[in-house]
Image 1 (tube, rainbow, N blue to C red):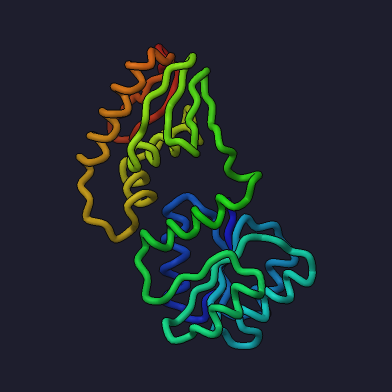
Image 2 (cartoon, rainbow, N blue to C red; image 1 turned 180 degrees about the horizontal axis):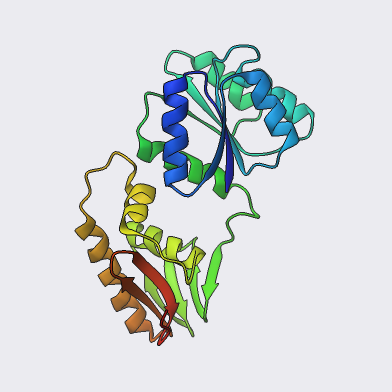
Length: 227
């Protein structure tokens, strides 16, 4: 997924790009409204993150011009807490959401995921792999008519695996994506959730397993599959 990030504070811009890339997003960063407009009109993005207060054209003006040009890419505004009237104006201009500064990494990532979920082409309700289905609406795993409910973090972990079967996902990637860049969550928490997911796959008799690869991470694959 490719995001466009417009933020005039160079330190914050650099930090946010690092966070996004660590969470497997591709990110283009600009520091003013004119560049944001130029990038958004010349390239294809899955989401746009705009600081309201920027030199040149501000975030609201940028979004108004994009919407006028027919660009309907989901947009998230970054705002100062005092900019209440501007937040309302931004939503009226076509923004999907706003996030007040200062904000946590976890909340930023959650807002981005919510923004991207609004793109019907991005997140279908069902993910399927080898006959196993993950229902994003009900948080359930289903195989041949049998179901297993997933708790919040279990669902998020398994969603990542289902989106990238046969690809290794490290423990650090799970933690950063789900709990946020600044979390103190121990790696053992991921192991516990993976253990619970394995039990639920066994209960369903699904031909799918989560395999641990030493010094690498976890991979979702068919039973009996080996690298």
